[in-house]
Image (cartoon, rainbow, N blue to C red):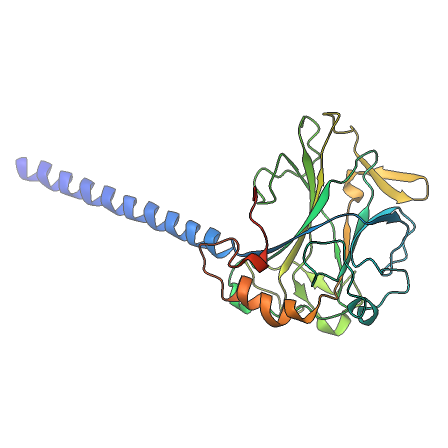
Length: 276
């Protein structure tokens, strides 16, 4: 009887040790995945104009413009690249970005992030002239852009600053750079499908609002045409790629491909950490 009890105790202890090991291993894998997704490039932009300019779709809704200040409806990748003026804090950011106006909400600034979820070493250069469209907005109250605390619906109860987050797909069909409706899909943990095999950094716009009145308008509406408004689900963003060569030639390696797994910003040229 004593032998049976001892055997059961040893088996139970072994089982507990095994479970502890598995839990620790899973935790380590999760931390490794989180760390591997951490590297980023961050650019802070100001809205420099609010107008009906949209060189990709020529849409009639009211847009906030960021990035290249030479943007017109006639802009091309070449014209943007050759006009290195920007509303952002990194002079190499000469791409153009825009998004519909959220009604009655002033924009304090826009953080643009480049990240590489999964294996960051597999990302490729962003082709000049690539046109991207992002849908599916997410919302965060008092967020710093890390992605935590985001939700699919507006943060109507938020009394402090709040933000709208829109993320662009990162898997490209390079034969259709100018067809933003079909040229890109989202990777899964950094892996692209055979239909869109060219993987670029995942770009995210974080549109920040001060919320000076302490109220998020309910319902939140966005511009959908001249004097026309739709609900928050209409929110989207456009990105017209034309960064200066240093971005593809140096920063992708420094900040993403070769960056240590345990850092957010491998170098000051990659951006400024939150709170700095």
